[in-house]
Amino acid sequence: MQFKENHKINIKVKNILFFLFAFSFLMNPLLMFAQKEYVVVIDAGHGGKDPGNLGNGYKEKDIALKVALIVGDKLSKTKDIKVVYTRNNDVFIDLWKRGEIANHAKADLFLSIHCDSHTSNAYGAGTFVLGLRGNKKNLEIAKRENAAIFYEENYEEKYKGFDSNSAESVIGLSLLQEENLDKSLAIASLIQNSFTSKLKRHDRKVKQDNFQVLRETIMPSVLVELGFLTNKTEGRYLNSKKGQEQMGTAITAAVLNYVGNLKLNTVNNNISENKVVGSIEYKVQIASGKNKIATKSYNFKGLDDVERVAVGSFYKYYFGNTSNYNKVKQSLRVAKSKGYTSAFIVAFKNGEKISVHEAVKIQ
Image (tube, rainbow, N blue to C red; front, side):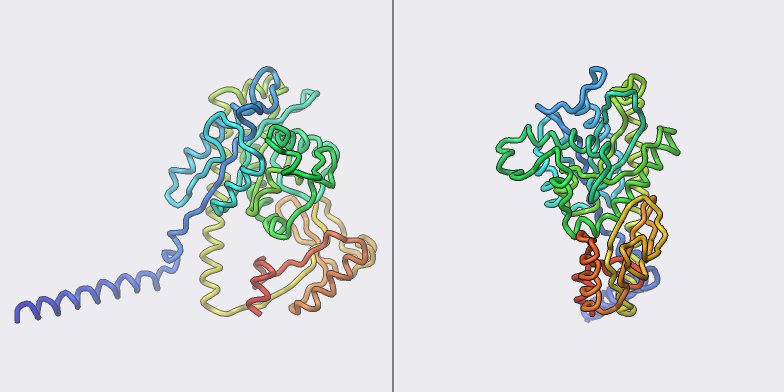
């Protein structure tokens, strides 16, 4: 009899505890999503037999590694961030392998760290995202970083048809990489702002260009040029413990800011899923760049109703806004017939960008 009574009491206690536990989630839905782990892959450029640039006798591979380890150590102290390194010592890693590491880890962010060089006395920090094409000066930077390909075994076979001197060889973007461009621009802007506002580094802006290591990834990705080793003052700073600690701290602050925004978006998106399906919009992205162009038909080869949207310091230009997938496919054909051969379809749900596959599936 006593056993039965104790058993009933235990069941009641468990039921009460379960109710309180469930009630706490209902009262605070943010807790439901607090356990997601955000994976950040940190890539120290060059390494091993590839020293990178050797401006003023400093080694790019060593400085990039030290800053990468500082960033990784600081990020690891945040409980819901997992850090993965492409290398944590002085070894050579193929460019394709760096991307594979990030893809295999299902990273939320890929961060590649480098130092720049130039024949002039250039200085300052810059951040790059993968772009359709860059200007001649930026292409030269991309060519230098892409030169690491030629340290890889069987590079002729792995990069068959690739010409490091050709912009066309480093332009081929996948749709998924383009869909990640918004987020890449967001984290790049945060990093650049951290360098310039907190450390007062000379601002070389956020740029788009054709880095092979960024082409290999399928998540938001950025490449950071910490500064110029060929500039005596900047090279000395980047080679110092103080400089490395400051640059690493600035990058960390930007990444934490970015992940914080991802958390908010994750919560908002999941909560909205529980309400209504919402409205779906399809558009054709016809252009992207830093130039703010008036959305007049004569500026877009006769296309009417072009929409301009600011994304960080860049602008995106859309055509053919519709909720009908078949109609947007027709708009895509029109855009391509006008010469926008790299145009592609994007989708939005309640104003938030989602994959086209997901939008079609919802409808």
